[in-house]
Amino acid sequence: MVYTCPTAKPGELLQLALTVFSELEMNPEALEETRDRLLLLAMEGDILCVIKELQATMEDPWWAVHFLDLVVAAGIARETSGKTQNKREVDLASLGPLRNALVLDYGGILLSHSTLWELGVRYLEDRALEESARGLGKALISAHLERRPFRTEREATKLMQLAGSIGLPSRVISGIAKTMAIRKLKGPGMGSKQSALLWALKAGDGPLATIIVDSLLWDKDGGKLLMEEGPLLECLRGVLPAQTGAERMEFLGMFCDFKAAVVRKDRSEAVKLLVDMCQADLIPKR
Image 1 (tube, helix red, strand yellow):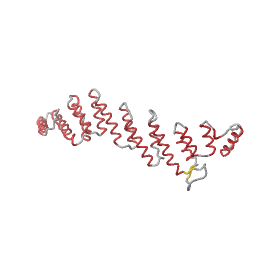
Image 2 (cartoon, rainbow, N blue to C red):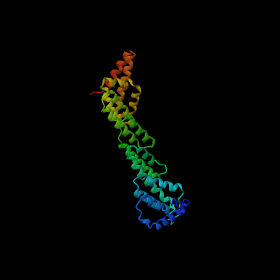
Image 3 (cartoon, rainbow, N blue to C red):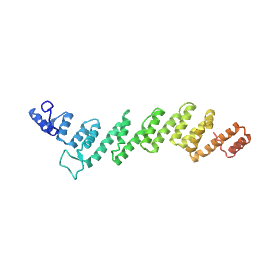
Image 4 (cartoon, rainbow, N blue to C red):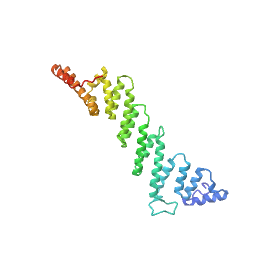
């Protein structure tokens, strides 16, 4: 057809194709190649059958998703009252649910890919999706990020930023930070404990932060870190829960004031603070 009828119009392609089949004594319904079947269906203008064939034969759902977008962009799909008898005309209202299903399917497949998962997030966040489908898309993204493995702090931060940018539940961000905090807590050295504390603060996990603070208090270097890091102390005040952290924060605050009094050689104030801590039984015990 390319050589014999190079100027054929789109509406003439089907008849020309059937003529070629007749000349070659071939049965159009017996075509084995997926590409040939798709081309014939496209020439017939049977949009829904083309989509079904793409879904059934193509390994990648990308084809069906973007063919559907082309149909809408080309104006082939339009609002119709009732069922249309024209195969070349598709009811726009019926394509919305179909596109939702295709995009969710394709986005879910991309999420499971080791390197293309971020592209899957973009598909599932498509603003053209109906509200209910976007809700399902967010649920898929949330479930994926909660179980997605990460090795470094940079990767964890990236996941948290992504979750925050698309408005996922706070438990997703907190879960990622808590996982990193526990991982750091198991690491060697004071640096790992300090990092674990910072991640616990990001997670907003008061009980975990309290455990880490207690472990640092009994370490000479860790205690020094807590007492001298003003911003860190303020962060702790905001995250430690009242039932387990109030006494710990009161002790840390009073101890910082005690150290400041010692530095400025205000012995009477230092003694008063020390006595107050003992009388209030605030000093942590092993």
